[in-house]
Length: 465
Image (spheres, rainbow, N blue to C red):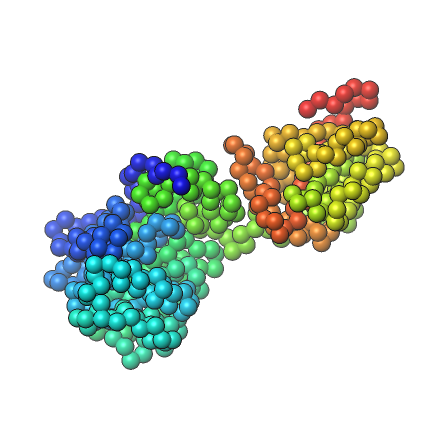
């Protein structure tokens, strides 16, 4: 495992300010977290310091809203907050997640073993694991219960401790909050916690809470609502490690830059933005949205100075041939199993229609070059840098609507699975998903770029890129 970088001072992007003259329970939360084996990080101390401030023995803030990237210790902070309240006399605290099953798994499968294995075990009375009764009970009568995600879940209960809405991005309505608020109404010590990573355009509940929190900070509120947000600016370079360090508060403490770098290589751009940079994304998280692809479809195929391209999957089980012309029209000619057919098919196409063949010389199809040159088929070998240029060019053309694509179901499937793989300061189409056939997209990308941006040299002169 890569070693951690030195600790960074990762300040929140938006945050309520502390009120120095108020008592708080941050020290108690820190002590409990140490006993649980999860020492408090600076960002957690900042949240606990403000969120547990008191006025006349009651929480200064009835609502706490916190959005932070994933894997930063959100769950360990929540457990510390909940146990602190229970130890200090809260009779009932509740926890909810995006589903009842997720909530049960967190309380019973994740949190209870941590408590049982810690020096806090003598305070523990019993862990209830039965369906519908999942809870952690302390000997002093404090209880942490799982609450179902329904409007009637809180009926008959009173909540006098923290009531947690975790993973709030999953909610499209207020049902979790509406189940809790009546049960908290008569208890001045109760406190609603809304905690999550950023969501998508469908995360309407969290959107409202984020707007409320940001406004409370802008208005300088010192009661009712406190808000915390760690996120990257919308125009930030998501491949810049300095952006990661200024956004992800656990870097240098529990995770390393290498972990984030690996996530960037394997995740889609939108998944990475939402999970690691706490940025909001669109519901359609495809790199090439279907609507964008459909807008570029035209019934006619290429007709002019033709460039053919071939690609082969990493396991050499599938291959594709595509064609493009200088006007930006592209077509998938063939997609089928195996590789033995590709060189002969390309030879036949060029001999019949003229044109050139472009191959990624460093990709799986690179072995075709010798076979094609042996029969005098003109071949353009692309380098990795050329392939980056090609991927960026086709992507830009799709966004601008300047490419014309003859419809083919395999193109739709390939574009649906498309992901970006960072390469230096650029990117390529990723081949990381072994279950996806990306050969149509790779072939179309090379054909489009060579036909549109690499003019055919005069006959009798060698092709040099």
